[in-house]
Image (cartoon, rainbow, N blue to C red; front, top):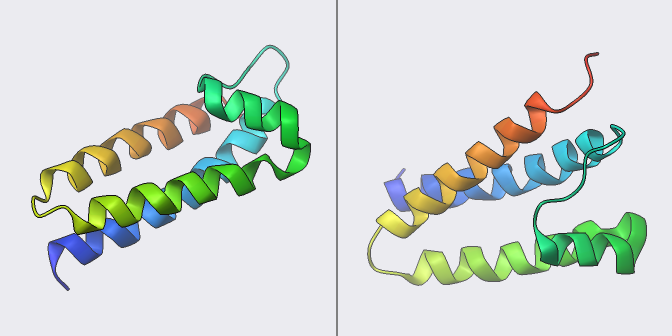
Length: 94
């Protein structure tokens, strides 16, 4: 599988993991969404905030997939991996 396709698939998986870990982490008292756009979506859309997240993620992934260089995909994948890890570290213990 080409590196570009693998990175796109990984980025899609990280978007799903981001939504799942964000929902769990934000259930912890005192934690809040750090992204102002997603904070607005959570306030405006309530439990369906993830629809806005996935629409924006889809547009971003499509744009990144069209870029000739692979480094923007690598950067985005690393960024979202860091976000998912951060969310996981803030989740309450099982």
